[in-house]
Image 1: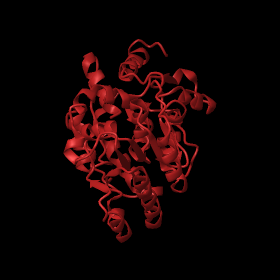
Image 2: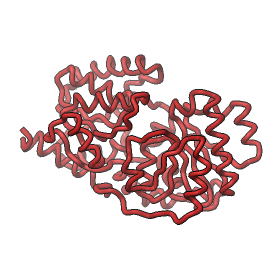
Image 3: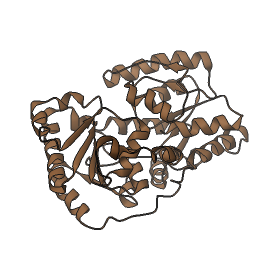
Length: 355
C-alpha cells in the first residue's frame, strides 16, 4: 500500500527504470498476491522467498539474498518502506554495498524499544541517505536525533495515496450484503502484534474483552484472522466464546474488500500501525490495543485512541456513547504524497539541488 503509489508515479515519468523486489517476508496469498492485484502492481520480477523465521534468521536470509540481487543490478537508488525486518535488512545490505537508500515513512517513533519495529525504524533512519516523512512530528523526531535537515523531506502519507486511488473501487463492494451485516453496526478487529497474540493467556484476555465490547454495544464483531493469529483462535477458550455467533471469523481480506469493511464499520479494534492512519482519514473510531503508537498524529488529529485490555470496554463504550468528532485529515494526507516523493528524487538526483 505504501510502495504502490511511488511505483505508479515513477513509471509515469518515463525517466526511471523501476523494479519492485519482493522479499517474501509476507507470503500469505491474501497478504501478498491479492494485495498486489488490488493495487494494480505487476507481479515482482524478483522474489527473495525468505519466508518466516526468527528475527535473526529472517533478517539474515534477506540480506544474503538481497546482496546477490544488488550486486547483479547495482540500482542507483534503493527505496525501503516502513519498519519491518525487510526494511532494515535491505537498508544494511545496500549501504554496505555503497548504494543510496531512501526510507519511506521515516521519523515515526513509539519510544518503545521492546517493539522490534522501533529498532528497525531507528536503525534504518540512522543510515539512510534520504528520509521521507509522513507527518511533521517525524521531521521533529529526526532533527532531535541529529539528522541534518537536508536529508529530510516531508512528503505526506503514501497509505492515503493508495486509499484515495482505490476508493472508487472499494466503494462498489457491498460487504454488508456479502456478510449479512448492517452498515455502521459492526465492529472490525485486526490483531497480529506478538505482544497480543503470541501468548495464550494474553490473547484470551484480549479476546474476552473484545467479546464484552460487542455484547455491550449490541454489535457483531468481524475478525479477519492474520496467519500469525490463526493458532490462537483454535484455543478451546476462544472457541467457547465463538459459540454464541456474535463473531464472524474470516480469512485475511484483500485490500479492496478490507477497506470496504473499514469504511462501513462502526468502529475498529486493532494493533496495526497503518489502520490507525486509514481510520483517521475516513473518520472511523479506532481503538488501538497497544501502550503506545509511533503515529501520535492519529490521536492528536485523528480518530484513534490507545487502550489496554483492562481499559478497552470502558473507553469504547464511553467514546461510542458520545458524539463522534470529525476532523480534517492531517497535512499532506491528500493522495499526492507520491508526486512529492518523485519531485524530491528529481531534485536530489537529476537536478542536483541537494548536492
